[in-house]
Length: 181
Length: 322
Image 1 (cartoon, chains in turn brown, blue):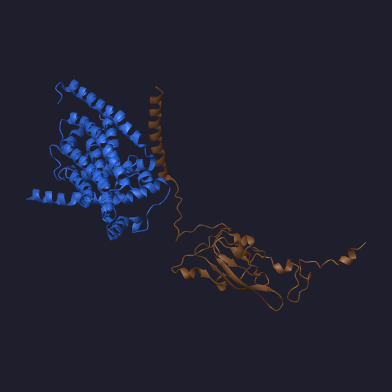
Image 2 (cartoon, rainbow over the protein chains, first blue to last red):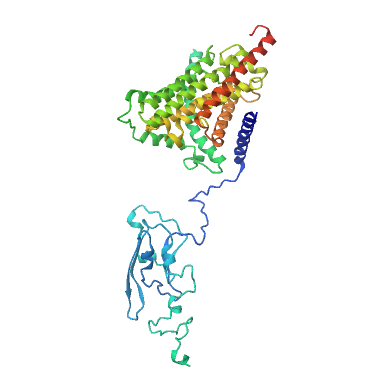
């Protein structure tokens, strides 16, 4: 009679399922009605890409091309340039958001925290060319997720009248001759 | 004269109400499914999304009406018309309230319904056949087998009611329920009729003719534009009709205290429509052989048993079998 038992169980389980589904009538909805209500995005959401400034107001990007090299869809293009003090920066910087897959590899590759992904995900456009962001669209006026960080203060480079070891977080180079026995 | 006007009004209003309900059901179903999945469903077009069916209809009407070059043209065009026609024709026999109905005291009303639902099977079969597409053909094939087997005990499950009342007229069946609705003495018959009705209208969980997971869209794979829409409306009209018949045959039709009869009829019908949707929200689709096994090995013997027991009791109590 095992078969009959299983049939009865199936019947009861069907009725039970119907009841369980019916009870969902009184549950809270999970839908977020998007344009009127918005979710709070997590701070590390990978959305629109920005270029940040260091706390002193200088551009962080040193035009090393590592982000462009890391980008799996080749959506980042830039041209590095160098001013008279030897400080490097991007002459132009272009991200094609119609190709970008928001993987965050550029952010990981960046040695100066210049390129960062933000929680802004509303990138809709009516015209595809509008999704190509130039440097002036990408640059923001702040340091993004790393407030106190200035690459040139920790890098130990001599640049723009500042010699090696003169920045706040640096120490002067060791004079190797003093280490002689 | 007033009789003619009443009839004309009924002829004008009832099919339109059923079709309107069928269109509204698309919204109702989507909203209810959403409710049972803790979502909101379509609520943007008009207040509470009430204009969604209108938007759907406009969309369907502006789509390209495509008849595939490999299809059997006349049959392909006729197939959706059949499901619509049988759906509307069945409205004719619904006894909605005293004085509201087209030919609701037809003395073979029940048989008429069974005939129309059998004819409705042709629609699906012809659609599957004329589309000249493997998926459509398999869908049509399944529906033919499913409808044939479920037709059998759908008719048998109603015979219990017929034995109790001694008539095929739906109006008289409702009148006979003044002392008690038939879902108590005919509980088995009601359950079987409901399952058969699900299979007849190929609704979840018996929607094997259009099983999306396996057959793209089954018999209406090749249909587009309003022809597809007509299949949709026809299916929902079937749901309305089966719910209305559940009400009429087992739940006392328009009978009920306080409220006007037409409201009672609508309320009861709506309850069964919601039950149909709840079943869709809950139950998975059975395998095809399980469907057939359920039909022939469980439902058919049970409905025969129902007929035999009801008949025996009727004989024992009245002594002459009605």
